Length: 325
Image (cartoon, rainbow, N blue to C red; front, side):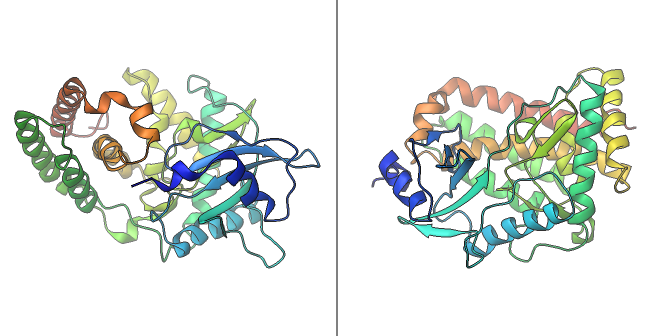
C-alpha cells in the first residue's frame, strides 16, 4: 500500500496551504523531519512560515488541539514559543487535501552551545518558564509518560521486527525484560507530573546570543519536570556535568523550584529513550522516508550494537543515580 506521505508532492503542499488563503510565490522547502512532514515557505508579503503536515493516525484531533492551546497559553504568559496561525474562525488545526495541517511562524536561530554557561542558564530559564505555566493545569487528551507501558510497547515493536536473528531476538527479550524490572523501582505517581514539551533536545531550541525559543511540541505530554532537563546534561566528566546542572537549574529556578529528587530519574529516562528510538524506527518502516534515511536498521550490526547499549544501560541502572549518591 502507498504510504499517505508518499502522495504529498510539492503541488499538493502548495494547494493545501493556498486553500487557507495564502499565496505562495515560490515552492516550499522540505525541512529535515521524519515523524511529520514539515516545510519552510514564505508568503507574498515575505513572511516565513513552517507548515506541519501531521502523521496520519498518530494523534487525535483533540490531542493536536491540546498542543496548540498549550502553546497559546505559553505565549500569552510571555514564553518564547511559536504559536500556530488561526483562521478567522479561530481554527489552528486544518483538514486539507486529506491531511491535518498547521502553520507556525518561522523562528530563526541556531542551536545553543552546551559548553557555554550563559546558554545553559538561558535554556534553564526558558524551560522553567514553560513549566511554571505547565504546572497550572493538566492535559486531558495528551498521553502521560509511563515507564511500564512504554517499555512494554517498545519491546513488542522491536520483537516484531523481521530482521532480528533468533539469538538477537532472545537477547533483546532477556535484556528488555531485565530493564523493565529495573525501571519498576523508579515509577512516579501522576501527582509528580506536569505539562512538558516532552522532546527537549537542543535541535528544538533556537536563538541567538543567549535568547532562545522552544519549538516542536509534537510530543508534549504529562511527565516529571526532569523530562525537559536531562538532555542538556551531556558532559562525560563529573565536574563538567555538575557545572551544566548548576547553570541549567539556576536559570530554571528563576521561575519555579526544581525537585532535586527527580535527578535520580535521568538514567531511567535515558534507558526509555534508547528503547523507544529503535522501536520508533521499526514501527515507521512502511514510511518510504525511513528506509532511505536509516538503511542500517535492517543490518545485524545495528542490533548487536543496540543490545550492547542496552546491556550497558542495565549496568548503569544497577549502580544507582549518576553522581548523586
